[in-house]
Each structure stands twice: as C-alpha cells, then as structure tokens.
Amino acid sequence: MRSTVALVNAEMVARRTEVSVSPSAEPLPVKANMVQLQQVILNLLLNASDAMAELPPNQRRIEIATRLGDNGARQLTVSDVGPGIAPEPMTEVFKPFVNTKENGLGLGLAICRSLLEARGGKLVFDGEVTRGARAIVTLPPD
Image (tube, rainbow, N blue to C red):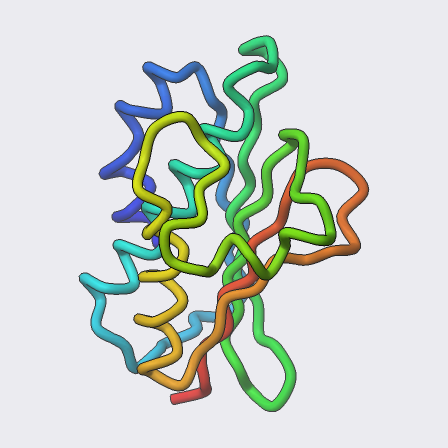
C-alpha cells in the first residue's frame, strides 16, 4: 500500500490533494498479485482525487486505511471528501463504459472489481458515508 502511495505522490502533490495512510496495528499479509492490487489502489486514489477537483485545495483529503475484517478478511478503504456517489448509480459505476467524468473510458472500476473477484475479493462503495465516498476492498484471509 505504501509503495502505491509513494508511486502516486507526485501526482497528488500536483493535484494539491493530501493523502493520509492509517495502517492496521498488525501486518495483514494477502495472497494477491501485487501489481494488480497496486493497480486497484492507484485507480481508487486517482478517482478519489478526480472527485474532489472542484473543491478548494485546502479541503482535498484522501484517507487510506487497512484493517482486519470479519472472518479474517483483509480490508482496505479509500475515502474522500468529494460530492460522493448517489445511491442509485452506486452499483452502476462498476459496469463497463459507465463514466461520471468528462474524460476516461469508464473501465477503471469494472477492471478493478474483476481483478479482485478473480482472487476471491470484492470492491464496494459504502453507502453510509455522509460526505464523500468510501471504496472498500475486501480480500480473503491468507
């Protein structure tokens, strides 16, 4: 996770977006293709930053956190303070070619979800967030 944040750090600085990392207290090893997992995290970070483009720079914040979930599952969340996702299209954003941005193909989240599901994981958005959006990546225990 930290290597992905380091990889995208220059872009976040250019976008004037603060990124904070809150790792779990204990290491959470996962069985996954690390390049694919890095691609998922990178996509979620860039989407979160895009969602906050209209906010003043001093309000653009992304938080990445990891924790141990139910039944030993590993969870990673990416939260932003942008406008959020309306409940109706929350599942639509995972369909190929569905795009809420001016630029892009609308494939990023569909690919991310497919990569995770191929490894027994999942990607959802938390509909309980009062401001912004929270993507939740869940991977099975080792």
